[in-house]
Image (cartoon, rainbow, N blue to C red):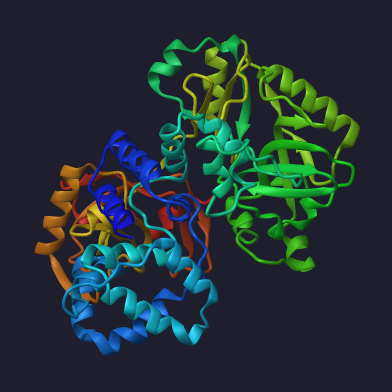
Length: 525
């Protein structure tokens, strides 16, 4: 546990990617099995321990520390695990720290009634850093600035393997990954792919920047519309079909109609949409189906799922990823003509004589309710990750609105001491007596210098406190950029912004000149 706690602590304070990789490489080389496998699970996909951390902490906390002290400290620290770790009353010298594998094994055999005593004993045996790491581990996601791919990259680097080889077999493995480490250290053969459909790492696109546009040779790229759905992978083998999200989560239970085709043996890449009467529906309609453990026939009828296919990774057991995009597309088109699974179609291929025509199409994407354009190099093989120069996404220009800062809350991690999460509003009501109505929340788009300026403004202009939230005098205007506005019955304003971020701080603009709610509603489309 001590080595894992030290790793998490140092990862938190190491901003550089290379530094994080070095720390994890050293840990995976030296930590024993199965502890390093449990650590890898926690740093990558998350470890599903099923431990009700919040409820157990609430129960034991009442007996071990002052609830009011915890409330006040949590509001300032901004992180529950760190707060508990710091205010937990010591019982003298810490005892023998439990190993990660001991924690996992003990919890697997424990009854729910044993949880409070187990957690109390573990917290008593650890120092502050160990307590913090334990709580992060039990929570399932440490959130120390490490992505799942970065953790796998560290494992690959530690043993001289390829990240692509690890990604290829990843979804057929289970924590604590004994087979993976046996292979990496030369004690066993590479784990075989599962007989069931498994996720293949996706190829991702870079945003199209000015320098990319300047160098672009239009004849080298295939062009398609970029639809506002979610990226998915349909994998079918041996009569079983699975639908994976871009991170490899199986989401087929939410879209059973897409997982029922017969006679399909392929791994296909595409966009999950809601289609009604042949028209792609706004993303808000897709949200009605996402993250549901089960769906009713009525819900499926109201929000019919559709898969728009644009690439093939494998057909009839043949790996196509080494072929060029044009060759894969031809194979996909032939396959779809022969099989045509229900609820699917192929993405449209767009053709332009020159870059002027391409730009003109991009400029019309918002009016056509399309998210943008995808540009894919015709000669590109299917490469996992985000290789440079192969695929580009050219999203439509953002919408903007001038809104008034209303509330602020501290962030987490490196932002735990700054007010960095902002709720903003627009004017509504009669012209003579307008009121501000919250319309969105954002926590990105500003520089570190601007964050410090905003934090000083919020502290100097706080008018009310609601636990960790501060109400701010309504006098600062934020120019908010967002991709779209959708109707929403869940919000008082009646609207919801998609991907809002702070584009500019309007220190110069009076709050009275911020936009009205009617202006934002007119952007719904």
